[in-house]
Amino acid sequence: GRLLLKDKWFTLVAAVALALGIGVNATVFTFVNAVLIRGVPMPDSDRVMAMGSTDRVRNRNMGVSYLDFRDWRESARTFDLLSVYTGNIANLSDEGQPPERYFSANVDVTAFRIMGEQPMLGRGFTPDDDRPGAAAVALIGQSIFVNRYGSNASVVGRSVRINDLPTTIIGVMPQGFKFPFNTDVWLPLGTVPGLETQRRNQRTWQVFGRLAPGVTREQAQSELINISRKLEAENPDTNKDIQARVQTYHEAQNPVQIRTVFLSLMGAVAFVLLIACANVANLLLSRSTNRAREISVRISLGASRWRVIRQLLIESVILAVISGLAGLGIAAIGIEWF
Image (cartoon, rainbow, N blue to C red; front, top):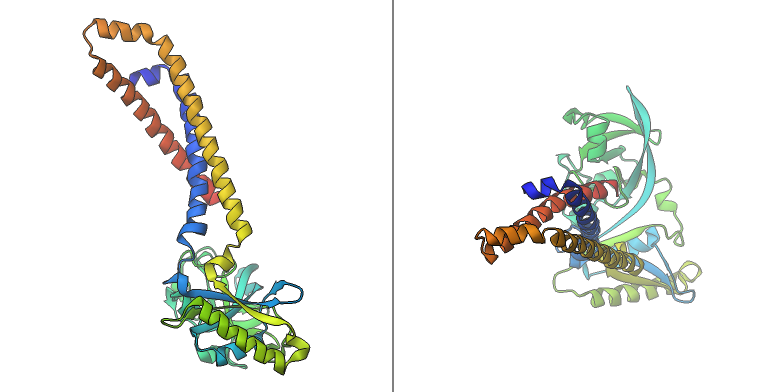
């Protein structure tokens, strides 16, 4: 340790090189682990499917119309729960606070049940909240709860204005919950203007659901394709060549392009770490030539070969620990920045 402090410029250069390599790798691996390995944080996430529509002629993927979703939910037997959502922007204002804009989502009442999430304060949506003419209610996220309302639990039950509509906050979602689009405000379907009069070809909704016990993805796909054919026959003007598409929710959120980018990035930063290790190894070899006389003196004074090797290993371990701790700090900053 004293020798590393004595040769501080060597220690600094070697530690910085290793720390950068370790930090960048830890940062990218955190993303790869979250996106590609762990997947969506839901109970039995491999049984949660995302559904969309495909134009067979144009080979184009789309969302789902609200009317198609209702027919799917009424006819499908391969799903325990089916839900629908769409993203939007919410203008939130109330007395004593400046107006702010947040990402919002209109969600079906079953969405949080599929995800296995409940508000940490207050209550979630009920079927009555979805009915046309129901009193406007909203759920808010942790960032609003903490930053706008100072973590004051009395915010539950407060009347605010969301998109100029008087709305009651009924609950606060847990820390880190941002489903589906980095969302901070959740509204029931009943607040969507003209929901019941939407046309069948307005395919702007996202559908997801949990498979029934014992049902496979292929069986669900086959059933929804049959339902799509029935809708195509009944509604040729809006549903001609439109077919249902089923994939896991994890696949839908992380398409092939994103997975390819992350894996390529992981390979690139792995080479960065290898280069850093090679550079530090060269530095250590160069330093060892300058220490040949020192090591000869130690041996002549009775130091065994093992003791000399142990000293060099301890120095390397200390250098690695310093670099690892610094790399951890770099990774924490990189993850927070991302």
